[in-house]
Length: 140
Image (tube, rainbow, N blue to C red; front, side, top):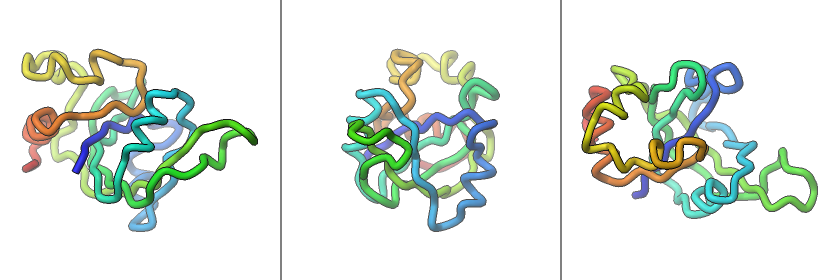
């Protein structure tokens, strides 16, 4: 299993909306960055991701799971190479993990969220996943 971080502005698509989408999940559309696109193309069914509220909140608020592999993004213009995956909510973080808490943890100094802060869909290592889950009150 691989791990990811999916960023969403809560006023565009919030954790509550993700939960309301239920087991059918939702298409993770609108990604317009080549590195993020390549990450999406690497995703496998069952991969897990942190759901991160960007801009407002700046915190990891839940866990999502990939339920459909990459396919052409229906929000892209004809001929554009963008893809999306479908994800569903798995569980909330009992204690949201803030960007400030991530920055304050020396063991997370190399997390892609910090190294490539503008990347909308960074990869997360196994060790980072376990540590952030622990910080948020979850067992990895």
